Amino acid sequence: MTQWRKINRIWCIWPSKPKELIEMIGGSYLGLSPNISYKRLLEGLSKKNIAIHAWNYLPGFDHQAQSNEAWKEFRECRIKLQSRIGNEPYKPIRLGHSLGCKLHLIAPDRGRNSKLFIGLSFNNFKADSSIPMLSKLKRKLNIQSEFSPSPLETMNLISKQYVQPRNLLIRFNEDRIDQTKLLLEHLQARSKDNSKVIDLEGNHLTPASSGFKHLLSEQSIENNYEVDRLSDLIDTIYKYATE
Image (cartoon, rainbow, N blue to C red):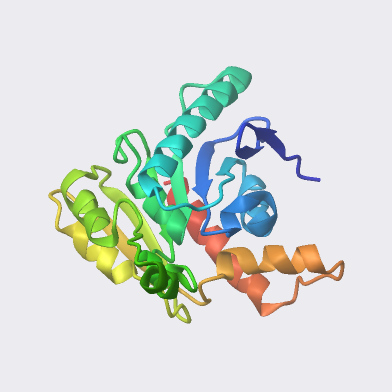
């Protein structure tokens, strides 16, 4: 049985001698309990001898502040893992899903201290497109609310300040809110970029859906097509994480 532990706001799985470390930030509200929402994805990767650190958060409007918090807590947790294992310092693979992609991409080190970024189903919508009823409340209360950085500011930061050349972007063929194409354009506008896109079968919730089904049902879902899709995703992440 996979053993989860929690250090501050990070859920961890530590194999005895992990070959790699993945630092995961999930999507809006899915990231509140990543050990449940992404259970099968993260435990599947841990069974391939990869240490897992998954940040627990509730989304807010100040994405830069949240990104800074995640980066700091990942660093502290990484130091504890290295002390326990006694290895050379890990250069983490940053894994994001949906909003989690953005939070990784605007990290204060701008990707400098990572081995690779893997983005699943990137999107970067305005606040009133992401939060139900917000546009109506803004008009009714005559207030202005937007994420910080805004979608436009986010893309400018990525193209001008983000330094990690190795980026694997994964999009799913049934995902109607994916904006991977936009992200790729801004990444490739940088010099010495080595980003690529892989298309897999699935939808926006493919990284998380099997975790929810496992939570809600004690019945085996090993033959479910969603598990096959998730297995493809795990194999793809593992391949690039260990190159």
